[in-house]
Amino acid sequence: MSNFEGHIEGETPVIVDFYADWCGPCKLMPPILNEVKESVGDRATILKMDVDKNPSYAEQYGIRSIPTLIIFKKGKVLWRKSGVASAQEILHHLNMFIN
Image (cartoon, rainbow, N blue to C red):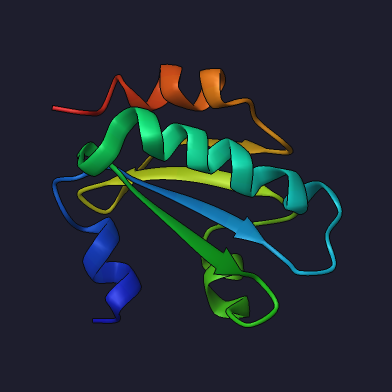
């Protein structure tokens, strides 16, 4: 099992930001995700997944456009969104899965 799978299989919700360095809209996500992290602290994990360096994961999760955010918990996809999302939108969905 890879480190990635170890993270998404856990009890703590994990937000994965599928992105690419060349993607303009993807560059808007780091400050938004920092705001989310400040709000939730250790109650959730945020990972970034470069689709160019990890094409098998992009294919496995059906990533067709970037940025795409997916919330995982216990290995299950609980929420996903393609395109830039606001911190408020992410927190709204994430808070449903935080114990």
